Length: 440
Image (cartoon, rainbow, N blue to C red):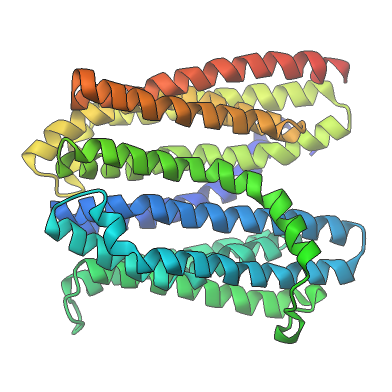
C-alpha cells in the first residue's frame, strides 16, 4: 500500500467491496420491484417499514464493528484468550439485540397505524414488519459472523455469504409473492418470508465458514458465557457507529410521516427514490472503505505525498461517479419509475422527486470520500458531526417546506442538507490539512 500506483491500488481494493455492496443494494431494489407489482399500497407499506429495517442494520453493524475492533486489537497483541472471550460475548449481544427487535415486531400494528390510517397499508405493513422483526435473529447474527471473518483476515468469504442470501431472495421473491411453481400466493407476506429465508441462508453459510476456517477463535457453544466488562467494551466502540447509522432510520421515519400527510403515493415515491439511490451510493461506499486503510497506512509511514494523492483522487472519483448518477436520474426518470409499476400520478411525482433529490449526489460524493480521510487520520468524529447536522437540517427543513410550498418543495430539503454537510466537510478538511497532513 506504500508503493503500488494509487489509481490501480484504489481500484483493486474498491471493486470487490463495491460488488459486495451492489449485491445487497440489488436485492433491496428487486424486493421492492416485485412488491410494487401487488399494488401501490403494498409498496407504501414496505416503505413505512424501511426505517425499522435500517435500524436493525444499524444496531447489527454497530455492535459487530465494536466486536471486530476489539477482536482485531487482541489478535494483534496475540492475546488469544481475550479474543475468544470477545467473539463469544458477541453472540450474547446478538441475542440481546434480537430480543429488542422481536419486541418491535410485537408492536408492529400500532407502529404502522401511527403513520397511516389506510387499513390496507396497515395490514400489509403489520404483516411485513412482524415477519422481518420476529425472524431477524439470522440477519443480526450475519453481521457478527461477517466481522469475525474480517477480523481474522478472511474477507474473501464475506461476499459468498452476502451473495448467496441475496440471490436466493431474488429467486424466491416472485415465487412466494405470486404463487409460482406450486407455492401458494402470499403477497406481501411472501416478500417478507423470502427476505428472512435469504438472511437465514447467509447466516448458515457464515456459521459453516467460521467453524471450518476460523479455528483460531475456538468457537464453541459452551464458551458463550457473559463477561460484562467485555460487553461494555464492545458497546463502547460500537455505540457511536450505531448512533451514526441510526440517524438514517430516524430521517426515513420522519420524512415518511411528513409525506403521508400528502398521500400514500408520496411515500411510495420516496421509497422508490431511496432504493434507486443505493445503486449510486454503493460504489462510493466501497471506495470509501477501500481508501481508509490506504490513507491510514501512508499516514503511519509519514508519506505525505501519497496521503494527499489518495484523498484528492478519492474525491475526484466520488464526484464523477455521483455526477453520473445525477445524469441518469435526470435523463431516464420515467424508465426508472416504470420498474416499480408506477401509476401515472406516481410517475409524475417521481420524475420531479428524482430530478431534485439527485442534485445532492455530487455533494454527497465529496463528503463520503472526505469522510474516509477523517476516519483514517483519527478524526471520525468529524464524519459523525457532518452526518448529524445533515439529518438535523433535512427533517425540519422538509417539514417547513411541506407547510409553505407543498410536496415538490419537500424534495429540496435533501440537496440543501447536503450543501450544509459539504460546507462543514470543507472546514474540517482545511483543519486536518493544517493540523495533521502539513506536519508529515
